[in-house]
Amino acid sequence: MAKALTDLAIKNLKPGPARREVPDGKVPGLYYVIQPSGSTSWALRYRHLGKPCKLTIGRGAIPLSDARDLARQALVTVARGDNPAADKVAKKAAKAAERRENDLIEKVVETFIDRYAKKQTKENSWRETERILNREIAEPWRGRALGEISRADLHDRLDAIVDRGAPIVANRVLAAFRRFCNWAVERGIIENSPCEKVRAPAPEESRDRVLTDAEIRAFWRACETVGWPFGPLARMLLLTGQRRDEVASMTWSEIDLDTKKWLIPKGRTKNGIAHEVPLSEVAVSILKGLSRIEGEQDKEGAPRNGYVFTTTGKTAVSGFSKAKALIDAAMLEILKAEAGEDFKEPDRWTFHDLRRTAASGMASTGIAPHVIEAALNHKSGVIKGVAAVYNRHDYAIEKRAALDAWGRKVGSIVTGSGPANVIELSSARG
Image 1 (cartoon, rainbow, N blue to C red):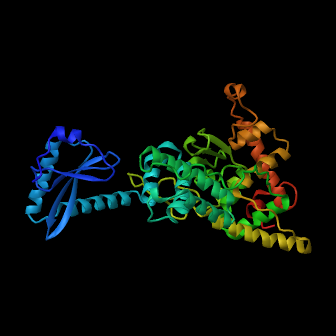
Image 2: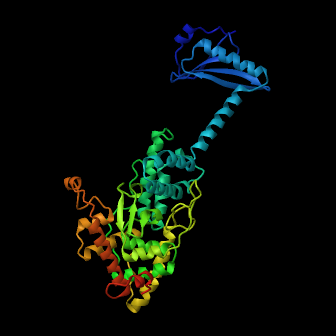
Image 3: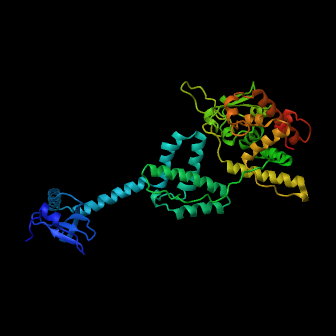
């Protein structure tokens, strides 16, 4: 019969070339296990329903007295007809399944947006991050745990985006996913980021695309073809030179048609600075011609001043990719018809290029660069450094002159004549 183990006997045991089990003569089935590496543990051997079973009840330097107490508790469980080893495995599997459920990439993305992006970034920014992560990451990898995503998986995903003809989108996906993974590492959700040593899949080149006069005419007519809501929205992008999401999320409460002004609150601008945009005659004419879709009501039951460009009254429009495709198709038909046999398909342009086109157009009318920057609410160019600190002039009068001049220039381009009549320009089809 085996002798009862003592603390001194356990201390004197040394690892050998093979795994060794030393029985305890005091508690039946209890063994002290020593691995060749020197690691130690306690194990209990017993029989359940006639079959031999083994339960590991402790690893490392667990005192002998504690190991015996745990073994006795397990033996009581066996006497009741249960199998503590199988119960332990089942609990471990259930815990792993629960953790995996919480670590599913779509759930982690949702948590990231709620706990980080919404609190640390502006609304336009977190909404774009949410759109990118849901569309390009969560949906393709739905049902997979974030910790299962490898660097090879990420490369395959980015390659697929590049192969569909969207290399710059792939860059944006990598940037958003990198920040997301860094946050997950900080939270202990994953140990390492799969983005480590992954480079942007496409080179970033500064764009200089502006629409030609012929393209502006075709664009204006194409907007008429596309109609509500993206037709007038796109025209406002060209006329005001403001950013896409700033125009798309415009609300009636921000607009004063009597004074011809549009005040974008600081919470909706890229640089966090409230921006007053003078509205040209044609811009005002477009806004006056729009129908107002009633949105939600306040606590008193009065209608709120909702979004200008909306189809529901509750949210601003979305689906810019489809709208851009419709405008492109209409423009090509118009340009082909005008050019005939001399037609040459123009280079691809983006909605942001309308902002650059407005800036270039204002410059062509003699507007100074710093006034153009003020009109576009762009603060990192001509006026910077010490000059930016001391120059607090808002250039309200100059901005008015600049955007009015640009509105007249668009009118002359669209109508093919001198400065256009506002009524003609607001409905001009060429």
